[in-house]
Length: 394
Image 1 (cartoon, rainbow, N blue to C red):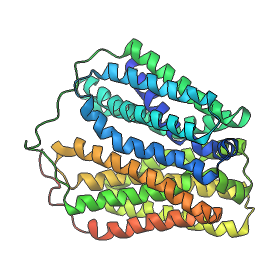
Image 2: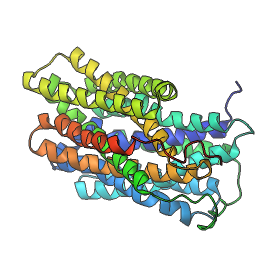
Image 3: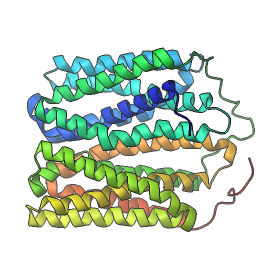
């Protein structure tokens, strides 16, 4: 296999950066809340707002930047992203921090879709999948390396240093893209809405998007408030949290890798319910263990591996279930809508987790299991029949 070109690695770094920036707050949540004078519930809404802004504006940016070269759009968006993160050094109140998170989310909503598009269009014949996978590796690496590193930096320095870390990552990605990414023509216009290949959100597809929102909301409801929950369950300190995040990240990599094999072997429906069932059972186990706190950190770590593996196994199965409903030529549009559903779910998850923690930290995994369980129940009738569009040629 050939060494990936520098510009492709730059795009992967950009994906790594914006994904780290999205979730790194979970590792510094208690310190951030205390320093800005708000509750952990209010501080957790920074994740909610970030995800919601991303979900609402990513499709709009795709239309607004249709006549702008990807290289130029990426450079401007990354520059704004860097400034929004470095400006946190001068922040001492929650409102200003919220404004900066909105600005960072607006920039991230440009970066990630364009990075994937640039990788796809720049790939040699027959290597598009490998180029896209390289960029997607940045997302997985953010969970395994970026978030734990940012958490550790916040523990040994200050929570603001965590955002500076994200800003410096963005600066590195901006530099590499400016240096290595070729100038391209403006992104071509979307095909006419009446053209063949247009997809329609039929009731089953709409239902599957709602399932995605609920499952993601359950997961993010737990993940957003992971730090205070683990502090209460196993007396986990910030430095120990970074280690647990790495351990759970390994579980996520395993879940992502083997879920694809299970989809091929047993089908997306069976794999989805297996992963969803493991997720809900793990959440219930953590909720019950709260009654026995403090629990040994090894037990907690084992359950976090199960949680992460199940949570990361769900996206590939949901993608397969949704793609079964559409023709191959509309797959790109459908996956774009699915991505928006993921971020809507992430925004909802922050609100759900915040409501739970306001009534007791130990309720967070229970509420996460409840919300995801509703999604599983909704998926039962939706996935019972094989889609008539399956196997239809492009």
